[in-house]
Amino acid sequence: MLRKRIITVLTLNDGTLFRTKLFTPDYRYTLNFVDAWSVDEIAILDVTRGETPDREKFFSAVANFAQTCFVPISVGGGIRKIEDVERYMTAGADKVIINTGALESPQLITDIASAYGAQCVVVSIDAAKRENGFEVMSHFGATPTGRDPAVWAKEAESLGAGEILITAIERDGALQGYDLELCGEVAAAVSIPVQVLGGCGNWQHMTQAFKLPGVSAACTQNIYHFTEQSIASAKKYLAAKGVPVRV
Amino acid sequence: MIGIINYGLGNLRSVLGAVEKLGHKGAISADPTTLALADKLILPGVGAFGDGMRNLTERELIEPLSEMVRTQRKPILGICLGFQLLAEGSDEFGEHTGLGWIPGRVKRIKTDDASLRVPHVGWNDFEQSRDCILFDDVPDPALFYFVHSYHLETDPDITVGTCTYGTPICAAVQSGNVFGTQFHPEKSQRHGLKVLQNFLERA
Image (cartoon, rainbow over all chains, first blue to last red; front, side, top):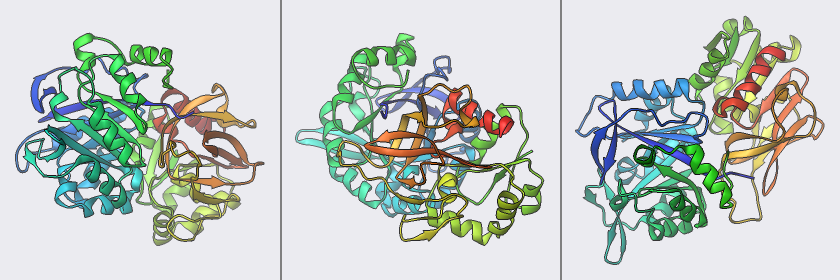
């Protein structure tokens, strides 16, 4: 049986690991929690601000992970054109994560999918809560786009995306649980696997997310740091609750 | 030396990283002379079948590789797309001819269960259906990492094991010196590394 995935998200600012809160680098930390044998997948995002940040330190950090963790690695942050992708792949990415670049030029999704295969394209969507539903935000969650996340996810799928990563901006670093309404709407809108991010504060939150049809991966960023709990303990909990995970 | 065939698709570095982690020398190359010196070959790859065959053709690799695999019987391991390319052909985005080193065709994964999404992404149970040195000292079943939208329909006689995703999916084959896995051993942690090690040391 296909297992639900636990994905560890690492955010790097200028080549250094930071945790984020409300989409802002909060403080730096070390990688003492990455339990290399339990994690199912790793996502590494460059959150360095600026028009043309120097990404070489970021790429060398990615290459380090790729050499020591024999699990799939998705990498994103700053991909705007198809020519950018090659550098991320040679650093060790198995998939790339695109967000603002896809909003600015939806054709980018199709271009990457044709060159590297649909399974290589994770379209990341950052959503903010509004009075009536949710709005897609670009540029590190700062710029409103007027788009509905479920509609955008569906469009991304038809353009060739292999997976969707949906993030609730208000939940980032809040540890109050995933935004189940947002995640449910997006997962129901598409027929490709969906990863959810933002708000995981305990293992029960993961169970809630995995109950939503179509959610195939729960992403976490901060939880291990606060609680010093391991991915292995999360999986033990989930397995006891009947969620199929790799233990 | 292990020759990792570079045909412009896929994460070759991670395959090389795994080979080196296991204490073997590897070389990523598109040069038939270099590949001819290798004790064993790995054909990795992700992406589309048509692109894979086109790239192999453009790099004039098909004839020298066929000589090494079919005539000299050099062991080869195809991974993911590299595994599918071993077959006779594929229906991915039109009809394509494959390397034809093993029987079978590559077709889109079809399931009746709408909750099973395509691509098939993640860790799934591999169940062995016949003995193969690739899975020596690997538990049965064991979890491996899969990521694909198409799968190989082939002769049960060469199928070493399957996983289930609505329908049985051929997950590994062996036909003489030709080995292949639909899953990514280089991304499947300890069991994956064991499969690679078995290929490197026992094939």
